[in-house]
Amino acid sequence: MFEFKLPDLGEGIHEGEVLKWHVAVGDAIKTDEPLVDVETDKAAVTIPSPKTGKITALNGNVGDTIHVGQVIVVFGDGEVVAAAAPVPAGAAPAKGVPTKAVPVKIAAAVPAVEAGLRRPVPAAPATRRLARELKVDINLATATGPGGRVTADDVRRLAAIPAGSYATPAETHVHIPAGEVKDDQAVVEFAAHAASVIPLLDLSPMPDFSKEGPVEKEPLRSIRRKVARKMVTSMILVPHVAHMDEADVSELETFRTRENARRKGNGDGAHLTMLAFVIKAVTAGLKATPSFNASLDPFKEEIIYKKYYNIGIAVDSGHGLIVPVIKDTERKSILKISQEIHRYALQAREGTIDVGDMRGGTFTITNVGPLGGTALIPTINYPEVAILGMGKVQEKPVVREGQIVIRKMLPLTLAFDHRIADGADAARFVTEMVRQLSDPNLLLLET
Image (cartoon, rainbow, N blue to C red):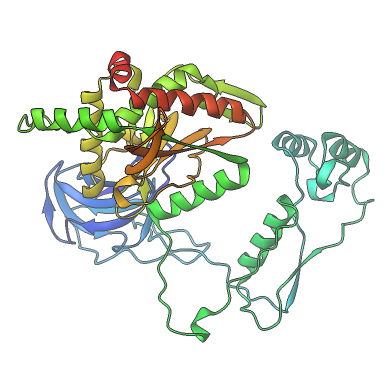
């Protein structure tokens, strides 16, 4: 018998959702033949069979979540097991029997409208580490830091007090208004913890929308769940500022259209899109304004300037946004960038994009132009510090040398982290981009 565990699917990926089994219990399979399709929070991947053999057990149905290191398939020539039985919480699985991924839910109901909970105290990671080293409960410390934060000195003072001689602080109460849904204890605990970290934050359980009319529920999974987490992190942690402008791309559009017509039928996948030119212009802007090609480490309080240029492009995969990364854009031609854009867009639609192609980005571009919309304010792809939003190219009346003329204008919005860049930096960055996009010759010089 051979137990096959879900392998490492890439950096930062700990679980995946079963999309499709290519085998059934009792089937014979050869090495490297498709075994199962799994969707992670970054992409869908097909996991091949690690060996030749007979399938005696499968762990997980379509839609189930399985974790890296968990047994998902059992190979062997013995008795066929129809399915792996779930293991009760706290019980150890029988030797050789794979465990089924069963979501664990705190089932205790809220006993009253007002539940008493100890609220976790706000403190820096270094302070929490000190509390662990001194073997004291940081929740019992008297906070003297700004915003009710526990400081290192607070922890040391607590450690100097003989054990058992200090009182437990009063419990924090989370109020659930009468008439609203009383969800399980996990919701209340989460609300208490969030409110302890973010002052004035007030979270309440969801009301029962089904009382008003029909509803349909869908689990937040895989890519969509990852997008949700990253967006919340970014919007809470990063102070966003947006700078907007328009680029006159009339000459660039003329050049692009002419070149696409000339290259038609080449079969090299190098259809020139506006995005490819924008990527080149962004790269030039990042060279001139390094603060937008950086990351801020809030724990070490230092800015990390990246000396390489990897531009991510937000792509709608059908299951949520993914961001494949075009590496080393300062060294690639516009034709090469166009080919990579085409390849990534195709792979995103098919769900075959490689996880490695979504790592290492230093700056992101999101383009809603093909779908319409005059402008947008995008959310920064944390831990990057800036993102460019592209709107739809439209013909507009503009003034040139005192005359009203019709020009093709591209709306641009730069959202950036105000902790490490100011409005003047954004103006210089976008102005340089506008200059590059207004003159195709400048972009070709960059290449």
